[in-house]
Length: 283
Ligand code: AMP
Ligand code: ZN
Ligand code: FE
Ligand code: FE
Image 1: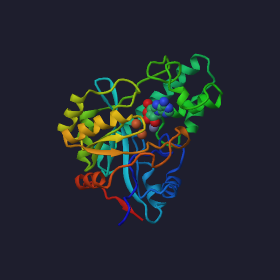
Image 2 (image 1 turned 90 degrees about the vertical axis):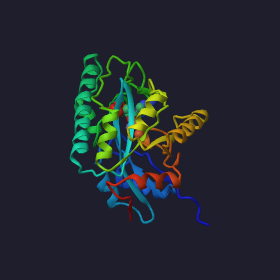
Image 3 (image 1 turned 135 degrees about the horizontal axis):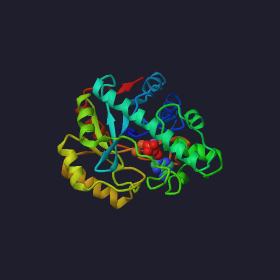
Image 4 (image 1 turned 30 degrees about the horizontal axis):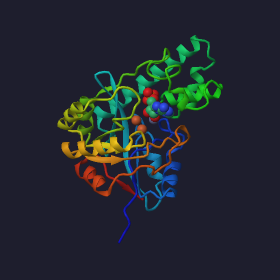
């Protein structure tokens, strides 16, 4: 009997705040023993072409993105898969999110510079190949020896949401984002909904998202402990949501490896069955 395919549905490349280029990420995925990888850079499909062109034989690529959303002031990350990247409304929304990120990062760097820290916008721009994010500002702080690691910059003193240097970006209202992705033929998975990075959305809101067309929920994520995963698996069953998992690989910016968390074959099939915007690519 064939052993189960290894499926990682959440990764980042240099097209956003990962440290591995899309092509190299595909080779790293094959080397890590993955059979299926989703590329889910923040608010962009910018890495898809390079990843597709470099796809090693035997590896399947699910083209996706992680969309910056908000529900009543609470940050929500929405994984979107297999949508048509050229569908104009969703493409324009992603472009708007990236523009807002640029403006917001420049303002955060300005606040840090005003406070006397030596970071510059030119430095941060040079550190970001694609979608800019706080991890790039964190890398700039690290280059100046101000923080020991990217993770260490996500505190109230530096770049956390309660920091004096924090500036919010213009995220998409979650219910509107669900509509946009569906309108582009894609499917949606609520990412790391119980990660302790700030306030989390209540279960009633997840139920409302399910009623509004959400396809799945990320259960197996390193920011979820075992009791949380069991609770989310139960919620997925109750709301008829597809349960997924992924490593949220960011290369050097975070410590966990590709394939650290996986999605079942049945869950991938369920996502594919509901998507009409793009095919899973196989080399
Ligand atoms: P941004 O999207 O610019 O608001 O930055 C948030 C991103 O930073 C998230 O998507 C994560 O990839 C990353 N991040 C959040 N918290 C941490 C942390 N504690 N350590 C390292 N990276 C983090
Ligand atoms: Zn990230
Ligand atoms: Fe995320
Ligand atoms: Fe992510």
